[in-house]
Every structure is written in structure tokens, then in C-alpha cells.
Length: 297
Ligand SMILES: [Zn+2]
Image (cartoon, rainbow, N blue to C red; front, side):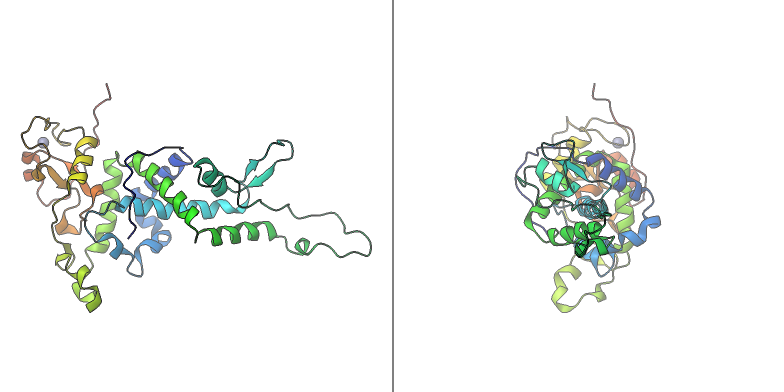
């Protein structure tokens, strides 16, 4: 589990924010079509990371981080290179990951320049060709090796946190996407038996009420506040204004979109604001959250 920074303010740079959000959204619409790609998240007990309640590094953060990492890995193969330097006719070329770190101020200079393409000119008489000319993949390999090493560094970790925070910011409003994500993860949670855990994993086993169902844990104030303001103080089903209630942030107004009884998580991305009536009516059923939003003005 990652500790999240306390800083309440984000400085957005919008580096591929919407591109990554778009990919995450597309995958969430039909996650089972992408199961093979998502194995890194779900196999080898990957789902256990999602179980502890009310992590600020939410299920969506974990998901975005995973996809953003894949996108940057995919961007190593050259076509998405970015020009760098004052000479725009003959720029040096850098990878998107370096461009992103520069943009976010995580680094001051590129850490890596993409090497020159395969040199097709003949080596002068009597001289050996430069070693890389024997390997048509040397550019791609150099880029790939750079990124593989980079992924273990703090600067990369910082970049992932920044990108993840920004994508989360734009996606948190999309209740349907969040419900899709939670429905997907619920399939895995629902299959967890407490017998799976070794004795040293007792804290994980203790999170379950019964096999496949997590215990209900009261949402903390930060989660209730986030959802209350996201949903603008109104029941997402009937539109009733809840901001006038004496206990505005009463736990009874927060619904687990994917019910705990169906494998749902205690996660901020699994909550929506419902008035008590609508919450009682919905009970433990799975109902697609409303996709109605009030205009800004
Ligand atoms: Zn209502």
C-alpha cells in the first residue's frame, strides 16, 4: 500500500490526462474483453491490495496507475518521440516519459536521448561498421531498456502519482465508469475465501464478514465529503437536496453502488449519495447509478 501525500492542492499539467482517461474508461466498459491485459492487477493475489477499507489510494487510483504505466511502456517504440532542444530543424528526440517528467518539473534535463536511427551509409574502407548498425532494433531496445531501469526510480514513481491524481480528478465524476470498475473487482472479491489466507495474513481474513463479502466499515469523513461535493449534495437517484439536513454527512446517505454482499469494496469510488428513501429502496441490489448531472449553471 502506498502512503498518499497530504497536500490538498494539485497542479494539473494535463499530460495525456484525457488519453489515459479514455483508455481506462474503454476498458471499464468491457473489462472482460481486456482480461489478459489486466492480469497484472488481478492474478497472484493482486486483488488483496484492494481489500483494506477506505484507502486514499483508491481502486481507481490503482487502476489508472496500472494503465498509465502500460501506456508509457507502449510509447517507448519511437513514433511517439518528442522533439527537444533549441534547434528545431535538427532537434534531439526524447521519450514521452521524459517529456512528462520535464513538464511536471520532476526533472530539469532529459535523462535519455533517443539514439540515431540505423545508419545505412557504408562504413569507410578498412573500418568496421559501428556496432549498432548490425542491430536494426538498437533504437527500440535502447528506449525499452531505459524505461525498464527508470521504472525502479523515485522520479518515475513521482510521475505516476502526478498522472494518476490528474486522471482520477477527471474520472471521479463519472459514476457509471466507477460502478463498472467496482463491478469488475467485485467478481474477484466475491471469490475470495477466508481459507485462502495464511496465518500471517490474518488481518486480511479479518476484513471479511463471510467468504466473498467484506465487513461494512463506516466511510471516513474525507470519503463522505468527497462524494457529497461530487454529487453536489443531492440524491443521485431522485435529486432531493440533502444539503439542508441537520446531519449533512450522515452515513445513511451513502450507498455502496456495488453492495458489500455482492463483493463490493469499502472504497470511495464505490460510494454515491442517496437520500435515505432511495437508499432503502435500493437495498442490496445492483442498480446502475444515475448518469444525470446538474448543469454547472
Ligand atoms: Zn432519493
